[in-house]
Amino acid sequence: MPIQANSQEELLPPPRLRMGLFLPCIEHAMSSATARWTDLLAMAKRADGVGFDSVSVLDHLLFRFDHEETIGAWELPAAL
Image 1 (cartoon, rainbow, N blue to C red):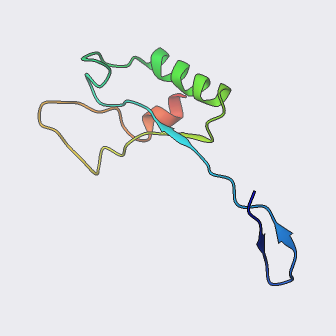
Image 2: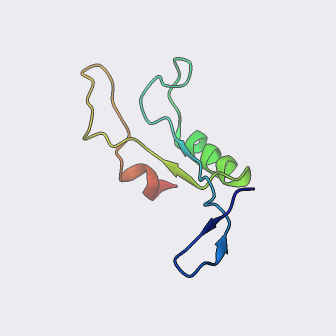
């Protein structure tokens, strides 16, 4: 394992890679199906259980599709 030194010449381990998971918040994102609240909660719990550092959702303000609805970026984390 590579090591790095700080300004005080102490040897430090390398920073740990952190992994997150995006939850599907767009209609028909799961093989033409739409995730229900219970599905999203199960996915978030499973991600936590297997060691993911975070779960995230896309912000619907950054993208919009005329033919698809999105779960809001505030409602989904609040519900979980």
